[in-house]
Image (cartoon, rainbow over all chains, first blue to last red; front, top):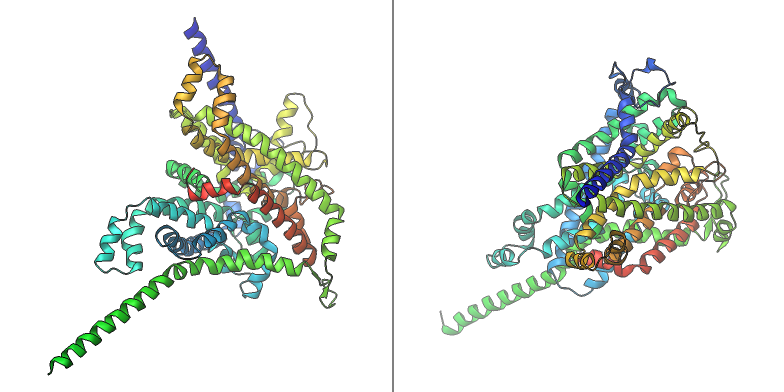
Length: 279
Length: 315
């Protein structure tokens, strides 16, 4: 009797959870369904969650044609890769300094970095835009990237990663006369790969999805990123007629991260937990 | 070659190697600063300089488009911002928004975490579903919800009608719009904070939970008196990062409502964005930025110990 009740409540819980999960996934399911629905279906039943019997790729074709999506992809990839490449250098060097070297002012500088976790770049868009203008980077992709070249989060993450590594290898290399850059590059970084990968995942996700800052920096259509393209697309939509094309466009913007997430789920989840837990 | 000459050479070799060693030591002393220099350069340019800039710029006014010269106005911009009804509305909205998102998000995040913490296949699927919204751009989430909220034919109204209910104008009614934005944000963020609770739950001592069970504590009592207290650091940490996030992201407001109707969804950062980017009132935008920087710092310093523990990784 007791066991039966336990089984019953477990089944009820599973049913409840499934219902909530379905509710949670509904926006995506709906988008998926709508993106494959022919335009001729009209907007009367645009809210239907049932897939159309005659799926079409027309919406994707229209989305790709109407926005210059190809260009937006290229620009977004340049921004994401550029930010990450510079960050990898800055955070590795700074992380190493904080993990392995003792020097006057270390704690003070550590707090100087810490402050960036609070004064996040989006809060400073107005003055930063003026700095970007002064540097002659207005309406350029480097202007979009520049505020992110230093990363307090990345520095702390690499510091933690380096601290967890044994010192033996470095000491052996130092005795052999290896200079500091060789020690970082050949000895530490290969062992610190999990930390770098976790940082890369968080950084790529953040900058792929970013909107407000690129919106302010970029003026010419040829320099726009995916999120800006999608937003102007969405803001130009009138009523339900364009839902199919917009659904397709939204999927196109989300697709690369979504595919990467499904392929490397564990890595993603671990990285995001790491990102929060460590700073 | 005399003995004296040989020692002379020996001396100079020794001296030069001593000099090389001291040069090397000097270089090594400088090394930490060299390694930190690239980061410090960009931190200076885009974290410290902007704060200094808004302090200065907030004291000046340059009317846009009139060609008038920049004039020193002292605290005039602050007076203008603080007496601007739109700013009051944005500040109040942001407070309602922050609390309105934070409370349900934390409850859901913890509930999700408790539900999916076991490592079964079913849990893994649920985890993915709950987490997925936090992976998509806020702009993309906003454009989906534009159609969900569409009056009459949108997803929400369509299914409410099937239940015989009639929804309000989700984004057009000034009493409802902010709550629609809150709903979107809860959906978007809950799965992200769930991850921290999943991690936090792994640190709840098993034997304490079991001891409570043996003592006859029911599930609610175990949650209330054992698990929640053990999760307090996680809750505190999530609260801080959530508050910072709720003050610094307005992508959905830009796409869905542009602060309207009649400022019902105006938030602080949107107010700043609008002042600078649409009305070209830089002095006002600078003053408002400094106010929001002060709020961010107050939140952060209030919880510095938590942030520090996170950053130093002892927790």
